[in-house]
Image (cartoon, rainbow, N blue to C red; front, side, top):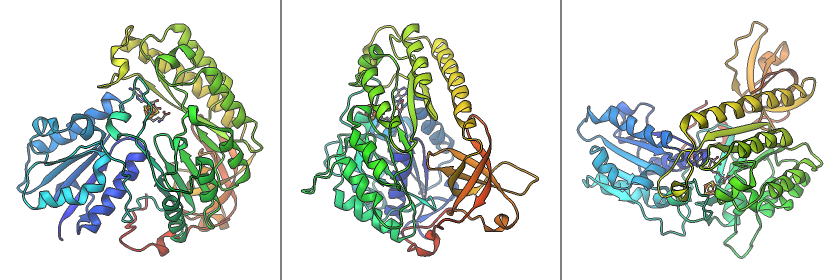
Length: 466
Ligand code: SAM
Ligand code: SF4
């Protein structure tokens, strides 16, 4: 075996996809991928620093290797912690050789070449860039769903958030290059595409075509072979009615919008520098709820932001009831370096944050259970992802996802037992509901199979079927 690398990813889908591009770049440079860090010549951690706990994870990983330093083994820290801590990482973990923030990934092959030539400490930390990380050498780690970055960085300045400091300024890709990548993926057999960005709907086409985000969505949705197009994350401030209209007009656009609210109190939203009020947020919810298709809505919420009173928190709970989210990602506020919220008075004690989080999650659990139970008896189309963890004496258990991005575990009996395959679309009757997923029985399929595995060139996709 020649040179080998191992990469571990922490954090969001943006990071997962960045790792796919980093892996593709290294494969192109002659490296081979291994699944065990012990066997790798180059061990990379693609890190997340959105909350303090996430940032600490990488240092505990690095410690595991600090003691056993094999000759010649190289370590790299990539992503948000790399950008945030910079060359201090070399002091904290002296066995680290490479520190690269995401805004410098387009230089990655040159930085790795310097390591190979014998330099012991190499960094890429400039945020002063207009470039996006575009590479045709992307290793695709998911067999049916492919990610496409349309916008990198963030120009908003939410008072709690490190992203503008760790990912740099907003840079959009040209619409032509996004559409070309989507066409290539459809040609390779992918049927589900997810467009990614910290704020996808802040997209600004830098080319003469000047497509709006909604026009770009339409362009992707019209590509032959694509059956499901998702996009995440949408910022409420930039969420226009045109996005709902384009979902209504294009069946390939999934019935799901992730629209992070963060708080149900306008006073807290103002302190968070979110640049919208609760009323403006609810107006957008109304546009979505009035669509001709039933669009599912999910959100992110932070509890215990400095100065959040009991009454502010109550407003967030009221919002949960008013909107009826199908899923909520909720977090305790975590103070982050460089952010404006560090200087706000009235911090909330950790025990109070934990209590509010528990109350919020309990409330959402019962809302979700009610919403999911109302689906019992309906027939949903799922994209089959693989076997389900649920053991069941009735036959094969499979896991799929509905267009609303809800997990539907189902059994396939009789002829269906041998016919269900990962990557296929099946119609499934919902028979039971829990707070986090649905249970059902296969009715009919496959409506359309994914043929990805047969179609992909090797460099582009050494699949790991999950
Ligand atoms: N750009 C998206 C938006 O503005 O809605 C969110 C992207 S951020 C990577 C994902 C989520 O992490 C945020 O929506 C927020 O709920 C959470 N988050 C960010 N900073 C946080 C902090 N300091 N403490 C707790 N949660 C945080
Ligand atoms: Fe962070 Fe706000 Fe930018 Fe989202 S919009 S990435 S929460 S700064």
